Length: 400
Image (cartoon, rainbow, N blue to C red; front, side, top):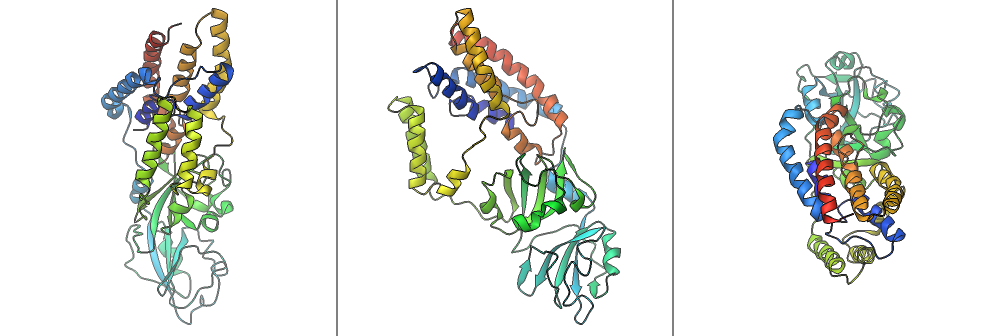
């Protein structure tokens, strides 16, 4: 799906950020020379069809069965245990940190149910009260560890596998971006729970769930975190630049689609204005963005967070670096620059071989449970096919 989406994006000028960047460089270098909205469809549609056929024929042969974080967690022998704070016991009136519940070897505190309230952000200074029902997450040995704590009652029949369904809970999956402040830090140092009001249950990296205590894991870009939180987490962090992907796995609040028809009409207006040359693509995009904000389809805060300030990164940087070289080659050869520019757009947009070749590659890397070698194995033949097709098609549409 990811690779087909990338190929389909090459069919229009606004389909990928790389196309827009290279086209803007072209118009700034040679005025009135930009490509039309659907000009790239001449090469985009054929390579998309090639990609679809390739995916259908070889995805099952070249890609092994991988497990996402939820399946990894379910297959791992990790359990949740509910324990009760005994009235008059040694824990009543003392904090989580004082009684050592934050420094256990085989388990950690997930949340505390206190009457009708559910405390999902449990810090070391949280004071325990009588009849608190504390949920712990850990391996089987956690049962022995919990039984050694005086004032804590643990039932003998609590051998159930992790089950977090609750009216006040939901599971979310987040993929860390390279700019996240917790990169390079351990989970304990990152204070993820207090920073984002979510308790991390499992971490997936390179297609496998990381064993051991979560607090000691040093985080990397592309790590997928499975966390328990409240229903507003997705809404609060959907556009947070610390995460490449934020998705709810169960019991999430559904998105608000009330203004979707209006947003769709604005998009159609943008395409019509650009295609009929009423406005340039830049002007039409600017007007459409203003209308999205004015009509409430997008809030000003969301629009501001959506601006890509460090724009020249990864595949976009490759397009920017190759553009002046291609223009110089075309000039020295006395040939048209258009086939070179289109080839740069196709080559820079179709990055299939590594997880960092395109932004969406990294988005599916963790949730799909993939490994680096999976991208190399599956993406290399597709890149060769797309490259060969582009070399054959581009000169026939845009002659030298």
